[in-house]
Length: 444
Image 1 (cartoon, rainbow, N blue to C red):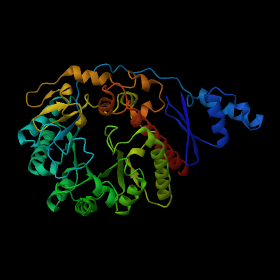
Image 2 (image 1 turned 180 degrees about the vertical axis):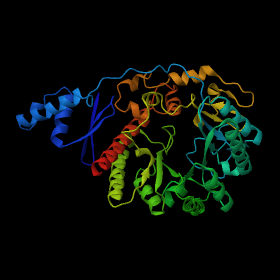
Image 3 (image 1 turned 90 degrees about the vertical axis):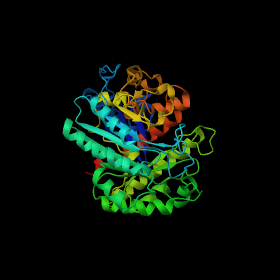
């Protein structure tokens, strides 16, 4: 299977099954595209001798296994091996903001406001270690609501994790996701010392952020969060971080939000599409796609220009490593939600991921009692690009791995039926990321 596309005057051909990405000139692109679509290249306005030469090169690439390669033998992933390597701990089902688009209902998750106890946090890590098999590197995201409203428990959990590392020969990479409101010198120094990664939520421009991310008294939070975030990043050195924003129907010009964040000194940025029911005024719908696609191309051009001028901005959704990407098994099964990755509520209930919390049909067990529903785990293991009809013939299948199961469930009522708008956005981001990757390799 081949996918031909162009982004900002770069003509690209992706060999889907091998992952080979070819940057070609306009003539070669037109000939490959016509040939791939079953049309005669000789109908194109090029000299026959030139077309013959390109077709000869195409055949050589096919013989080399770099173009139009067949689907490889697929590994059997119809069942989970039971290994869990990553966990999202809901330190707080409470929050000090009241964001308009919050999927967690401003922290309540439909279950009321509550905080995780130290005992549940420790039981969660015990559960993770017990189910991690021979995995040495484990991932724990300290999440909410807002985890910093329960900071003493954050510290107790991390301290306990360090004990478990020594006892069981594990390495636990802790990440914290915060809105930044409660950051102070103590918390900043602690996070920078203990956290492998930190994600801070800022939506970009002041007017965009303050419209959506309000305090309980209805005021904007931009002037509270930005100084805190800047101080944390300035002290963090070369450690991992992301500034994570959300775009909605109200800021489809989100390139301006990226520029705002870059202007504030942040160089690792993620601006992600909101997930809301179609009837919500902030929702992204099919009629917004063309505008969003143009914005992604504009962002590609902006990032490219910045790199050519010596400044490298990392945009999370454009990060593609075409040469050293994940193995085939990983590309088939995706993020691992419900299989290798689970979320734990303040009461200790286990769910496939943070977006399933509160969906009682998807409660997988409890870290307190130690139970784990392997039927749900195996159901998520079977939910992959080999079992989703929409994915089997999709050129982007190895990049999205079937897409987000939570989005599929929330929009379509089934984890096996991908959400169309989410798919289209993923495909466009993949094209833009591939273009930036190809451009960077051309410049080497």
